[in-house]
Image 1 (cartoon, rainbow, N blue to C red):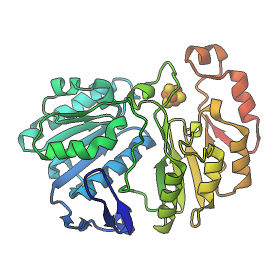
Image 2 (cartoon, helix red, strand yellow):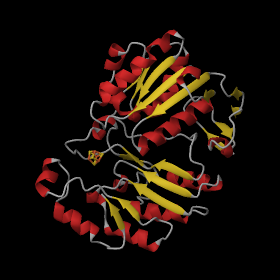
Image 3 (tube, rainbow, N blue to C red):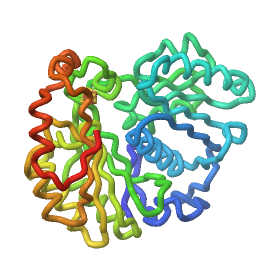
Image 4 (tube, rainbow, N blue to C red):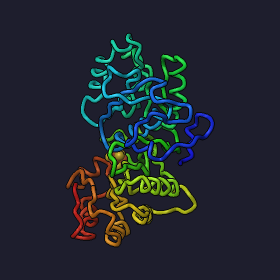
Length: 330
Ligand code: SF4
């Protein structure tokens, strides 16, 4: 059993297997039955961070007494977790929201999450007045309060704060893969690449406490997960906020040491923070997969500087020369 508190009042206990998605959520919380608050449909676009955010949002909704359904038609709450990395992302979101317009008239509540929600903000309410919730990823920790307002009948609820030092942690995560678990260890980004919206949409860099990460990895191993993928926009910029000050390579080793964990991966690394101790950890511990995603972005130092990347071509080449037997995928 796991003791949970979602900022909604009293802590409660929940059986761990109910968090995996392998069991039916016939009774999620004491006194709460699945679907008693309605049903939700959650559509996700974008990166693994978005996928995992959606898993956490789904866990939170399930814990609250919602039931997940496969189509917007079957849902009372439709959530759209957006990505702004592609060209004309906002246009595409508004076009999809247009398809949901008539659903509001059918009594459904429509919400927009993720990067486009953060970028467009309350403008979404103006352009798509049938939307009731707009929430960027840096405000997900406030979702329980926002959901409570929606349930109370509020027509416009927004969470657009990026000025935060908190990470989105929930004990309830509805993981879709039964063997491999995503786990976000750092959110946001403090870099300033000229082409990227992440610092604006996901807020400043903030790392999750190492003891909280390791506790969750142990719980995952107990549930039967054998692979953990640590996530962050710049995952290797991890900076433990606790007094332990565990560095990223030590965290990798500690995660791999957890009994039951057979594989550890991480994505995405930033070349400037890719230090030799990370390579040593990969070499030392066979459970840490010898696969690194290290975006090069350009082979020209002039272009890298124009992009405000924080390394040169020469520095990048030196990084990947650290060991010739590790596969680098740019
Ligand atoms: S380091 Fe990555 S996430 Fe951060 S601004 Fe640059 S491209 Fe965006």
